[in-house]
Amino acid sequence: MGGTKPKVMQRDGVTATGYLMLATFGWLIYTFGPAIPLIRDGLEISRTLASLHSVTFAIGIVVAGLAASLTIRRIGRASTLRLGLLLVLLGVVGLSIGSLLSVGALFVTLAAAGTAGLGGALANNTAIAVLSDHHGDLSPTVLSEGNALASGIGLIAPLALGLAAASILTWRPAMLAIFLLLGLVAWLLSKSSSSQAFTVVPAAQTSERLPSDYWPMWFALIACIMVEFSVVAWSPDLVRDRLELGPGIASALPSAFLAGMFIGRVAVARLSLDTDAKRLFLASLGLALIGWVLLWATTVVWLALLGLALTGLGAAGQFPLGSALLIRTAKGNTDRAVGVMAAGLGAAAGAGPFVLASLADGLGIYLAFLMVPACLIAAAVLSMVSTTAPKTESGHS
Image (cartoon, rainbow, N blue to C red; front, top):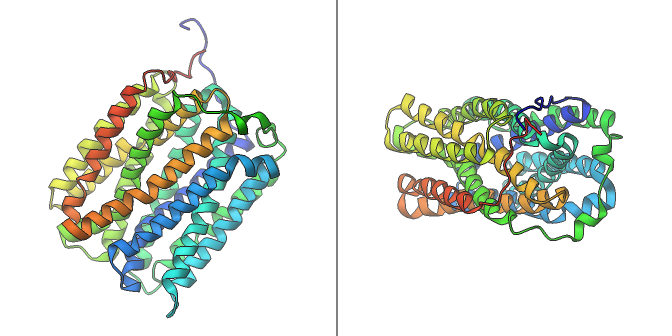
């Protein structure tokens, strides 16, 4: 309403716990994705086989999404988050050690990738549900702000990976640095786990169906996640092929994409206070498409960096705004809505890089990247079909 005062977001220990968990998951996925080509080099396997790491990682995310409601109902949100942290630790250790084995390395690294995906998604899904319930109408702003922090932390992840890969250390220490973030999340959780947002689990949610309004945006968001994970995983290969760069430098280039995401999410967090989330979502798709055109067409390094940054700037609002729209259509069924969303996004996270890699093995990486605009256009059409999705002008009541 025009005469009401804007709501003020209160950040507390629960907010800090949720934000840091989003940042931790960001470090995981943004070191994991660029590490796939390096794992491929070390194991001397094809792009298709290497992309199976994305598939098993995604399978873990899907399983976490499907099991989220039941797990939370059985052991609670706080314990579910702790379980997720432990599984991430085991997965990252397994991925690092398994890639050094002379026998059975691929089997071990694939299993470790799945474990990391399962744990990361369990913890991240819980954090999203907690933040959404804790902040209510301000969830679009909160999720945008939390994901801005995740992008900021993730911004240095490919850079750290690339620097490590170019040295005698290899990529592994950059991925193992997640231990520090896991410890901080566990410490913050110990201080805030008694909050109502962690302890309240409406049992009725687990048996309710999600409304039909939920599904068009669900599919649109899947298309967006396919783009995000494909760009992070395989843009190093694209620039290596087109710009003739070394593997270490190429692995660091996705930092430009993440820089764009960080800046974009800071902006979206402010814009979403008094701008319709659907309008922002469509604008983000258009901006990402412009960035892709520049990245795909150029053979100049600085223009490729600019294209990656613009693509990231556009991608910035797609997950936080889309997920806020999805959760709002669920009419209070938060844990189930987030779980189903995560299952779909996990499938998309694996399918995107796998499909692009398979296309690249057959057509070349350059033509394979045509998948990106196809997904962006599909997301725009699907989101426009979702005419019943609510407005998220959460700055006003």
